[in-house]
Image (cartoon, rainbow, N blue to C red; front, side, top):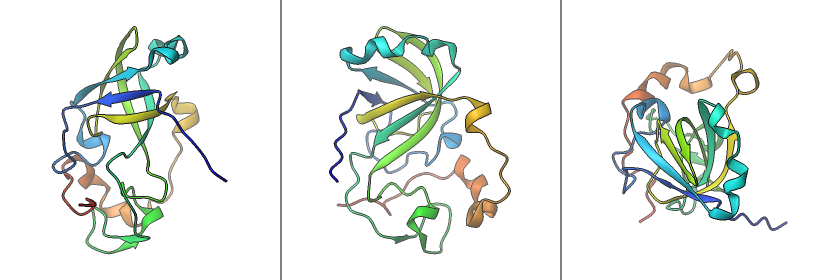
Length: 161
């Protein structure tokens, strides 16, 4: 099966290179950016301004290849890729929940941006706590490390060149 996706827009952020970026939105609470939507999709933004937060699905455009065991940012042990949020994946899809500050025409003003400048946007979904927030019983190996997401910054461990 061949799956083809086309970007609906581009995410703009202050991060021009992966190194030194926040690794999760919790570490980018005050970082602002923009999403520029392709004109053909602007009508689909109707009613989005009623939501405080949105889910951005995007393509890790600087990611090449992957390993099934990785040393994630918040740990020193090698872990199974799918138990991490490492950017180098078989399908280079990223997800971030960001605050929607405003919407004018084809431009969304957002906050909580942990995304590389120029990242192709694949989709937008409204964040709805009743649907998207679940009571968690266990967070695996991240149980003791999740707090690091607020201060940890990206380094070279997932760069391909």
